[in-house]
Amino acid sequence: MTEPVEKQPRKPRFDRWVKLGFVAVIVIVVAVVYLVQQKAPELEGWSSDLPGALAAAKERQTQVLLVFTNNPPSQEDRSFIEKCLTWRTTRNVLTHLGYERVHLTIADHPSAAQRYQVSNVPAVLLLDSAGTILKQRSGYMSDLAFCNEFLGISVAEIRKLQEQDQTNP
Image 1 (cartoon, rainbow, N blue to C red):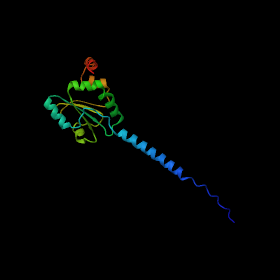
Image 2: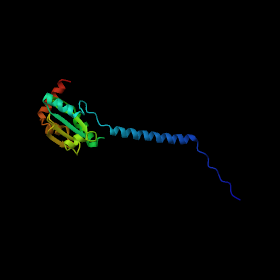
Image 3: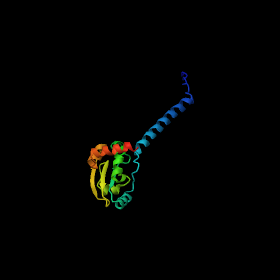
Image 4: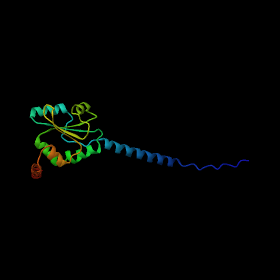
């Protein structure tokens, strides 16, 4: 004769729903983190219209500051944008110099990246109104190096702009 098989007690359905809910919460958190990382930091006052910026630069007799980054932005791109381009003094320097400002991603604007031979990002280019490269630099730059070395603004001029900014909030 065979021995009777002991039946395992059935787990309540509630346990299953708790586990499914837990998995759902984890999936949602991972999705939110992923989407946040995909979003590039905002550059207020920057355009993505290079031809329009070149036309405006020609009309105003100024130059175009062109920045290339990845899409999604790398950590180096994020650091450059957050610690340099959005720095209040950098914004004041760029406003003072009157540059047309353009931010493009290589993935969304491959022809522009190819035209300017940009392969390493972040990349910063200073263009004349015809689109000719006057200066070009790739890789992370600190805010001071960007203003001082790339834009050619002395530390004394930067301090003067900071003082003006403090007196005119």
